[in-house]
Image (cartoon, rainbow, N blue to C red; front, side, top):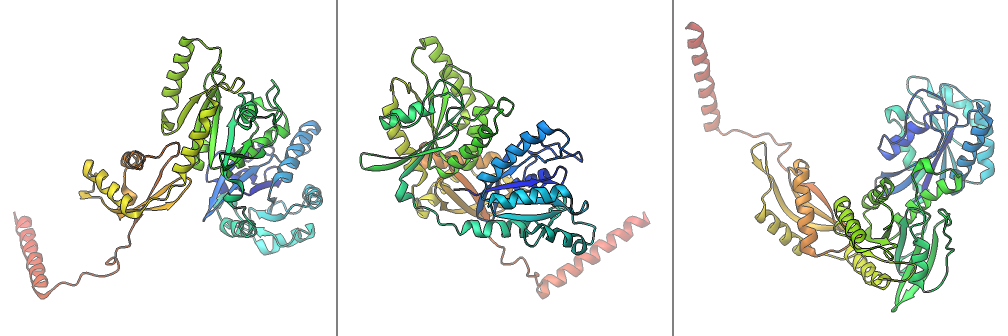
Length: 468
């Protein structure tokens, strides 16, 4: 499971800035104003070969007792569900009473806490950070988040022990299938229908499922683990701190799964939250099966309109199979087993280098790469770089100049050629090192003579031009 890193501290110590640096985004608002972040924000981060989830929490200011209690509750949930806590303090403000109170609470939590001193640029850091040893949280890690200094050292310290945790093998759990979607679309009902028994609570009220529920299951001598997740609503529609952190659980379930069953309500329009969830699934590269639930009771006109909306708004996931089902009555649910198996097989398929190179040659023959500064791009061979999703590495020269349109063309060509269903294919490019990059071209005697003669000719022509 992906580790969760929670960033905790007083207002205006740079938590949102550090969040943006770790996630390489601008998702969190940043301003020199205390208490700007009043809700938790979560994001996806990558460092070397490690991936993690980052949580930006609100600072505790004491300006409003009610608001402070609300943010304190959210911070406690973030700390309880995290793998490691980054306690951020401000080097310019020095040690404060609020820092001591937060440190006392973090020590009682029993979580691994790293003390991070921010804003150490332009000051005598050794002198300033010495007072933070009084917090009893070990050696402080100095950074300057606004200038991206000390971040690599920080991530090395954070992720080193987390990557050593034992990972359970896929054989023990079989195919992991996560059921995700907005609240009340019927995820728990569909899980019960797939299992053939009532294993999870079903109630006609959004938010019944608060945590991700893992259910081992076996069918036709194949092992599965079904993951029933909490519904993800728009941020402004969410009020309870428990439900807010269930978003993290859903993100972790997507990352941990092999196949994601994305559920939508046929009786409601496709919402922004559906598109955000699909975007995260795409970013994670997970195999996908799209399920439109509550199909029963609709007339032919409504069904045609819904299918047209799905084709138009979800054209970016045409590789995924779409099923129109009724989880309550079981209509078309039996077809999901085969769809899940096909998506899993496509996502974990091993492809030979010879076959991928032949497909690359066919793609180039059908549509050659464009010219870059008068030179044709050369794509030489391809090999597989990983599975779930399938990663195809293409080697050549000037590959960093390949236009996005040609990358999309190659991606679609490979998807069709290798006949994958329900999974995206990621194309990566590698440019080989130039063996002559550091070698100076040495002219022969004849070339030196011709060069000297050309220089003399140019000088004579310039003298004549100046005379006239």
